[in-house]
Amino acid sequence: MKFYVKLDVLTAAPSVLILKSGLRICSNGAARTNIPIIQDYAYYEVKLQNYRGSWGIGLCTVNTPLDSVQSLTDDSSCWILRNDMKIWSRGHVIGQLKQSVEEGDIIGVIYDKGELRFTINGDIAHVYSEQTEQSPLCIDSGGEVLYPVLGVGDDTVLDVAFTANSFNYPPLSVEGFGEIKFQKEVTF
Image (cartoon, rainbow, N blue to C red; front, top):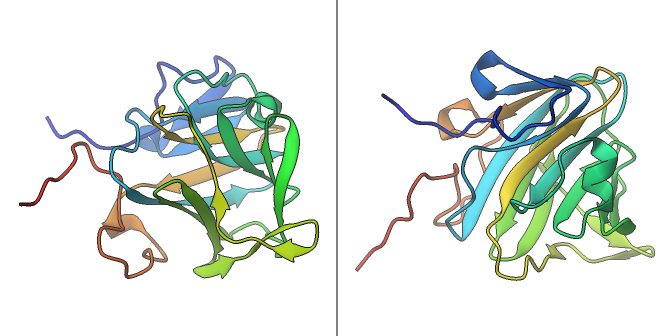
């Protein structure tokens, strides 16, 4: 039996639909992956397949409520980019992207040792806070492990890619960057 990273139907909101072997989310609610990020560097991509309503993508802890996109926005253990291009945590905007997106665009999520970055169609999206650039965005999970998380509302459809062979825009050529792993690799 082959294991792979996918959206976890067991912990997802009851009102959300997870399709395409755990790689598509639609309807209303949120879902996190079946495994956490255990390496220092991680990357995943989200395609705005059908962009009718609200969406949110980012990182969360195991305790984040997955009821809705709004619950992701309000939670203190979640860092989420919303369809308004604002980055939210604890019910507050902590950053904003100047770029806009439309249906068919691909947003990359880069996690790098406590820093969060986004790409849009392969280009780095700079994070701004009060009109000053602050890319990357530093996040503190309080030592808790982080999970990729996606939320949708109003029948938005998002497709997600977690494996290197399914990326449209492979991550930066930094050693260690790539797909989310099932086990941490130790080198001697």
